[in-house]
Image (cartoon, rainbow, N blue to C red; front, side, top):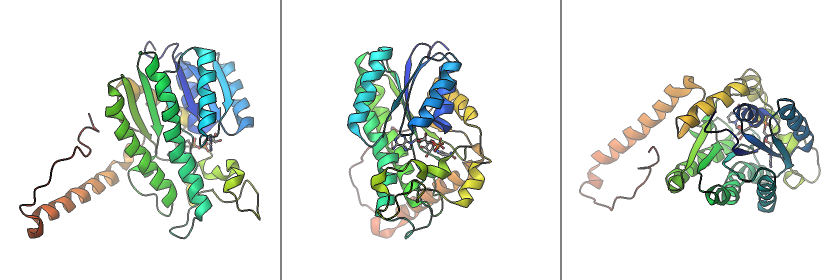
Length: 297
Ligand SMILES: NC(=O)c1ccc[n+]([C@@H]2O[C@H](COP(=O)([O-])OP(=O)(O)OC[C@H]3O[C@@H](n4cnc5c(N)ncnc54)[C@H](O)[C@@H]3O)[C@@H](O)[C@H]2O)c1
């Protein structure tokens, strides 16, 4: 595909799951692929899969919470491929399910660091490189349907995914001047190992007395059953290409969730209507701020 051919994509969390699905599809459309992931064993397997498909690929270790590691990835991407055109902030973890008291401080910090700070740092480091060549490009942040409506008892996950949707809406108008298109991918359940995210939990987020990689961080049995029967990551990848070429801001893959999201917006609109009708607020004039006004452009 002309728009993508010979351009370079950096994919965080690219060693498996949705990230690898995206890599295979974008590589199939002629892109150079840089896979970056905390899981070095899976990374090698993923690199070989892409090599076997004749995709130009470089695989590098990356923990998305470390800015210096992002800089190293950027340098090596440019050394190998010359330029970076697309960043996919895909690395993410599920975190423990269990309501208000279900996640301790370390668990919260892990989910916020990987799912939110990882996205912020990735963009902060990569966007200047995408700007620098003047050819434009893309930033795709991977959120979730949870970014639009709560995944019950998964507070940290839901909060970070809502934040990623919000960040995307901030960045889209900001980066339009540099012809960088910003989108947020919001899948429903996809067949990956997201329900076993604890396998890659960094030591500092584990409790001292039980330094086991399987400790915490797994979303639980209910999520496992819907994830393991979820959509194929390859379909998600193809859908992303379709949406990129149409410059979609919100990239959805599961249209069956439309009615529940619509119900949420209707509840918000009804709440505004009650405020508009409140005698307490009649005649109260405040300056207009551009809240949300340009997000959907
Ligand atoms: N699977 C789903 O149902 C689903 C639904 C909506 C959104 N998502 C989102 O899709 C993204 C990809 O998840 P997935 O479902 O493919 O799960 P996955 O667990 O199969 O893949 C996640 C990848 O991220 C990597 N990773 C984890 N922590 C990292 C870190 N600190 N630095 C770098 N890499 C790290 C893992 O090693 C893994 O390769 C996540 O952001 C997730 O929240 C998944």
